[in-house]
Image: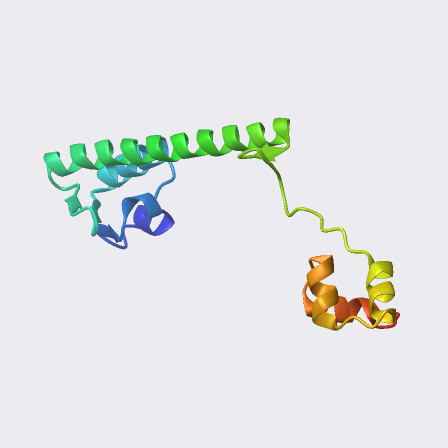
Length: 142
């Protein structure tokens, strides 16, 4: 904005106007300041040019719809998070990954009876790698 006030350019071109302003109020204030400074505003993706009256009107209408969409999405996300927090659930299931109960003592017992790694894995409902790791001696991490 400082460069605009110094008169260093006559046109501001943006890819999408949503990237320029986060709210209609911010957009309108900026456009009003640009108008007072004699600076035009062009949005490439929306093919809008504020140098024309129709371009100005369409620009404000599209900006309002974009802000409405952002607001609705925000409300839905907050409502969904509140729902999940209150019920500690999401679609009837607990939030997060379910805790797997893994009995190392059972692995050791089955291995001492001569069962193979794959048979132990099948019986405990774990992967072969998890079963093998369960039998490794614990190492201290630094």
